[in-house]
Image (cartoon, rainbow, N blue to C red; front, top):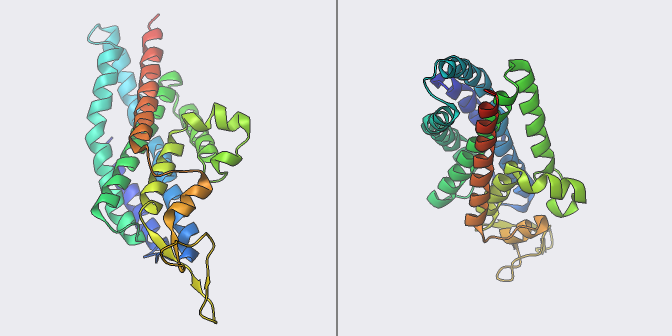
Length: 265
C-alpha cells in the first residue's frame, strides 16, 4: 500500500460529505443517515480491492524468498498484517474527518472516534479477506472478481437491504452472522441512533406526525433507539461485536496462512 491509495478515499469522502451534506436531525433524514452509514462501511470494504496488485507483488517476492529458505508463511503473514495497520488507520481517519463531519453525524468526539473504530475494523477485515482470496487465487483478474463477489454478498446480507429478522433462515444463519459488514453496520447504527433524537413533522394544526413512536419525554421527538429497534438492534454489547470483528479478521488471516503453508507441499 502506498500514499496514492489515499487519493480515491479522500475524493469519495468529499463526495459522500457533499451528497449527505449537513443533514439535520429530523425524521425525514433518518433514512438518509442510515444510507450514509451503509455507504461509508460498504465503500471502504470495496476499496480494499485496490490492495490486490500490491499484495500479489509481495506474494511473488515471498514465493521466491521462501524457495531460498529466507522465511516462511508465518513471518510473511505477521509482517504483512502489522505493516498495513498504520496505513489503514490513517486512511480511516482521513476519510472520517471529511465524511463524518460534513454529513453531520452525531456531533461528539466520542461519536467520531467510535465511527473511526468501526471503519478501521472494517478495513482490517476487508484487507484480510483480500489476503485470503489473493493467496488462494494469485491471479489479479480472478482475485478481483472473487473479492468483489464476496463483498457484494456481504452487502446483501449485512442487515441494511434486508433487515436481519427478515432474512430467510439460510442467508441469516449461514452468512449473516459471519458477515463483518453486518457488525460494522450495526455498530455504526448504534453509534448514530443510540444517543440522538430526531424531530417529528409539525402539521398545520400544530400537532406532530412521527414515523416512529415519539419519546415519552417529548411527544414531538423520536428517540433514536426506536429506529434501532426496527432493525432488532440494542445499544449494549459493543465489546462483543468488536470481538466478533477481531475473530473474523483473525480467521481470514489464519486461513490465508494455511493456504500459503499448504502451497509448499
